[in-house]
Image 1 (tube, one colour):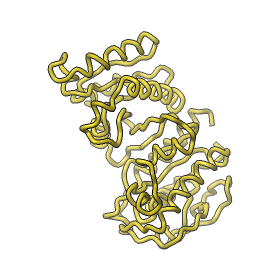
Image 2 (image 1 turned 90 degrees about the horizontal axis):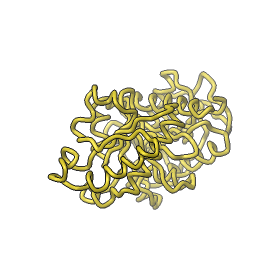
Image 3 (image 1 turned 30 degrees about the vertical axis):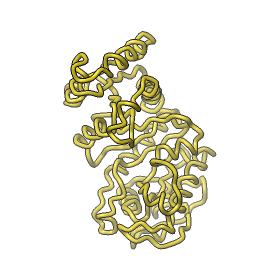
Image 4 (image 1 turned 180 degrees about the vertical axis):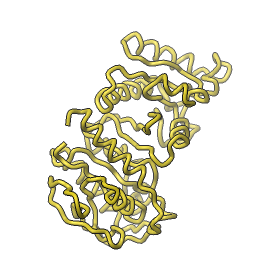
Length: 317
């Protein structure tokens, strides 16, 4: 991999700059895009040009000047447009071959909406827009588990309507393709969680499984995909069950994220499948409550950087 992994700064009022500096100190190598004024005091850094490698000593910074200093724990409205510009720049560079992958530090969606009119629910949707892709999938991954929520940032009351056969099929197909392309799994095994308790229990607790999920899964299996389910979500995530699949496709956000954050809260990685480039992110937010206090754990960012390199290698990069 000749081109560097590009790490966006995220919200400079959050823990992004701190965990970037800690990841570098731990031996990770990347090019950080952001305003060096926002790095923790005492961070040694050097400015690099677009396409330049990270080197091995001072932290490599692709400078992007922001409108204001950062205030730890308090989003600065004047900096919102800079956060968005950094993401756009990272995508432009990786699409031009000047970056191997994009790794994104956490953003605060409300802060971006208030300060820059950000019109997207989050990173995932914005990156799809920048890449010109209609549909992407959010995967959360750690050493022992990969999960994909079919519906993401919507109220729970809206999930039964949003979880259509078309959406579920697209999610399964993108997950299958991503496991092959990005994780090097030649014949992925995908387990699908039911929407209702006990996967509907034959209609006693809901009909979505019988009327929509089972026919779809049978059709995909007839095409040669290894898809099983729908399974009761409460029995899918113990150690023995996890050995039976390479990824679990879940009906909604918490159904997917609770098990992975229970198994590996510090080391989970957010991966976007379906993009023309590799994108990973630590699986946590801006953590305003501890920003600027030197307490932030870089484990998830380190895992995200390493997974980005592994995914690039799986793609032949």
